[in-house]
Length: 285
Image (cartoon, rainbow, N blue to C red; front, side, top):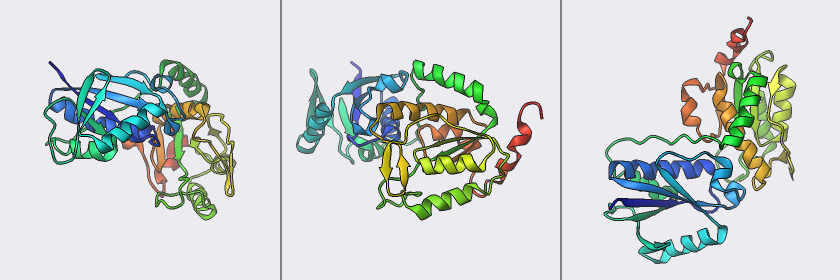
């Protein structure tokens, strides 16, 4: 009988966190003849969305949606028990240092990294696709705005000022980010995906040809307005932006985004000198 590797992430985890965890678990599972199953918490980290609201099925992975209280109960069980019951089945709770031998449950990203390290070969990150309805919206947007000829700019602004990832919601860090982008010639066609209204406005004011997905910045803070991370519409827009970024000719990636591993070959870094020539690649030039 096929053994099962089950996994879930903390309630606050976002989509990128969850897919990295899942990739680690699936790497071990594939090498050791396990099925892989994901418990998807419909929590604040993903704006309370069901998995299928955002993404298409992932080949070889079964996904079960959990309500917030169900994920919380599961989290509490992992702290006090050696085994976990989900439905009619029992799972050994994976602890770093011990290789699983039967059905097991892996809790969150740190344990998934320890699980991955039990395998001798390097793993690959899973690439997820938007759900079919979202892909249809993206296809029209990509064609209308000729995204394949644009520079994609992804700026994720960190809300926790105690973290080292920059830019944070601090005025000087936002201004430094804008100054860095301003080195790119104004005539380069761009697509911008950011959770900061200030960043979006400043990018649009510098570049003559800027495309972006319309959205609400309805969270007011001292340094400006931001996307509310617990808004379902904003989460769906974020997933569409990810697909748009992956369609761009080149990409600037600040602070990371889901599936960014799939565009490493066209990601550029400061001083962004490669971006200056993108306008020459436009159709008709």
